[in-house]
Length: 96
Image 1 (cartoon, one colour):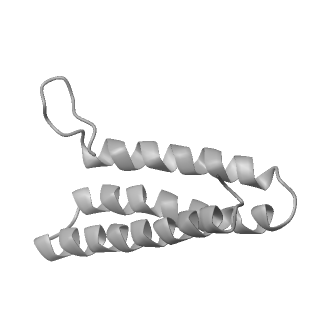
Image 2 (cartoon, one colour):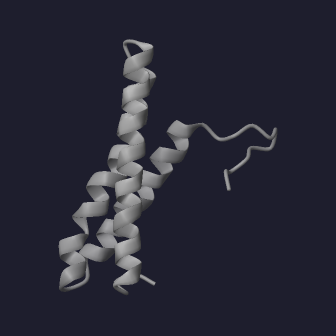
């Protein structure tokens, strides 16, 4: 469910993806502090998860409608990849 402001407008996608990236960075630091496979997997969601917001930001300065759509499509692909890594971490019981 989307976060909603007091005036019922959706929170800006740039803020939401930035906040998500901050959580991903914290997750990476948590995983990197653990021994074994956690450390190896830590950088995968970091790369994909922080890329989501970076591409959303780039899309805001798209040189054309096609460029805007392309950057947002890349952000969606990175979000799907991040989702994969998070599912893997949970399924392998690295994370609860």
